[in-house]
Amino acid sequence: MESDCLIRGLHSKLNIRAVWAETTSVVNAGITTHDTDPAAAAAFASALSAAAAAAAMLDEGDRFSIRYEYPGSLRGMIIESSADGSLRGVPFAPHPMDGGGNGIGELYGDNDGMIYVTRASADGKILNSGQTRAPLADPANDLAFFFSVSNQLETEIRTWIEFQGDPQRPVVRMSVLMLQAMPGCDLEQFGHLRNAIHGAAASEIRKRLDIFNEPEKSMKQLITELAFAANLEDVSADDCVFTIGVKPRWQCRCSEESMRRAMTVLGKDDLLKLFAERPNPEIKCNFCCRSYKFKKDDFFPNQG
Image 1: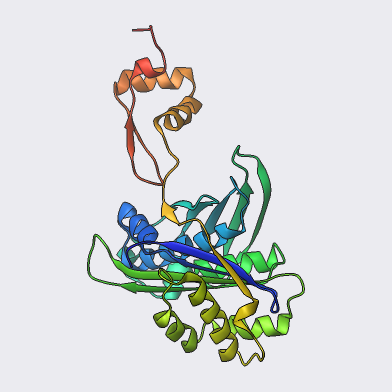
Image 2 (image 1 turned 120 degrees about the horizontal axis):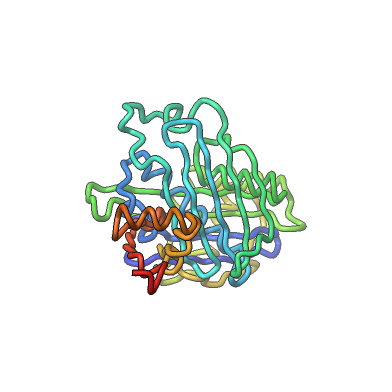
């Protein structure tokens, strides 16, 4: 797959929202930026892809900030996704396998984690926020759990990932499917569909989809074949309406000005002490690992 994409839409009879995204480039950028080991890469890719799909829920200019905390060696991560398709993130422990254990229990811990989700507008105003347990030991599933419990919007998310032995492009293909029960949805039918997307049939359907060349046809095929796998009758492709959404992409919002503002929280005295000890201090963005260097004149012009 040469490019990422996102398709979203509704099935008017089933009353479900469906979002499919190809996120290979996004996850490769995130994994290589933070030099994660395979265990952290899988979790980070799951979180990034789920956030890319969830961005389809946002109004123009809005963004999600999603914080995962786990008691295991993975520790957690922060992911930000915006309505314009931009994503960035930071894993708290890029190399959890250094401790020797890479099982689910070691990585995620024996107890539930927590997930915190904030939705904000373009000017930074918090529109809503919430938190729930993160009990499923998978970031995508834990985000679906959050929407189902905190937002009372029944949600299911499935991710697919294939790795290869190329450190510059470790992921061959990454895909994500999100289903949500809209008002009027038969929750029993939705339950059958959420089970179907985790079955072998969904993986076989994914192999046949031509998302890039025939996005709408592919999504109609996906929904109708999933409905068949879920033993739902009379589900017509004609009741599906899909549109191409904004392309997901790895993009950090940091800048020299934002890093300068971050340094001002030290206060005048501490800044002067810092520049006395280090004439050209460097600050690094935790999200994209880009470094910024400053000098005293950037904060105290005309003071020598």
